[in-house]
Image (cartoon, rainbow, N blue to C red):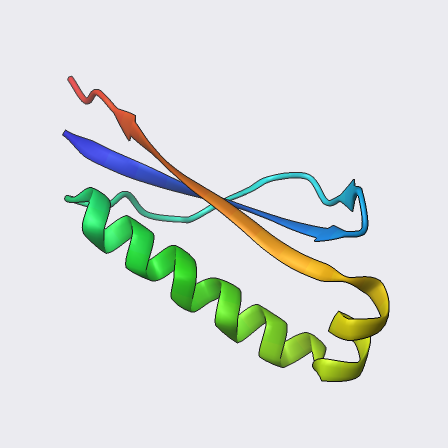
Length: 68
């Protein structure tokens, strides 16, 4: 089984369309670690002032996919 990582960037209650990570993960663990790391990197890119002013969050999910 493999997992797909999907990320969404939100300001207050307004969110961007979901972004699907370009590759699949062999484990939920690897997917989750990548999701957390991607969220940290994105928030750092945006910057503390904008994150604080806009209440920016990064949401992610790791969903199992069945491959043939």
